[in-house]
Amino acid sequence: MTKTSVDDFAALIRYAGLPVQPADIRQIYEAWALVEPMLDRIRSTGWDHAAEPAHTFRADIHIAHPGKTETF
Image 1 (cartoon, rainbow, N blue to C red):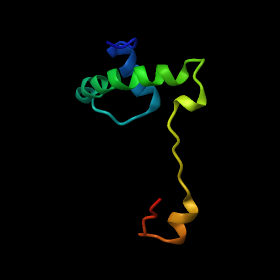
Image 2 (image 1 turned 90 degrees about the horizontal axis):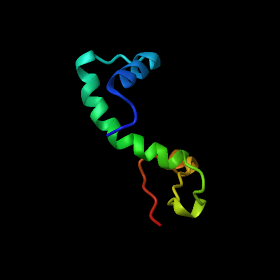
Image 3 (image 1 turned 90 degrees about the vertical axis):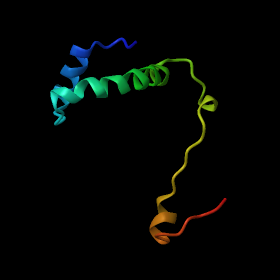
């Protein structure tokens, strides 16, 4: 169950200008039920930076050696 109703979600889709068929909105809304709680956790206060796993991306490695994967 999400805090956002289907009608409100459809309005957000239209406001964003996404080219979504009305029949597809219900299917996307079902996935929204999984995404919305994650966004609430991200936006909540009191989270320590150590609570999130570290994600790094070094563009210089991928640009300098295209197609090659670096092992750590």
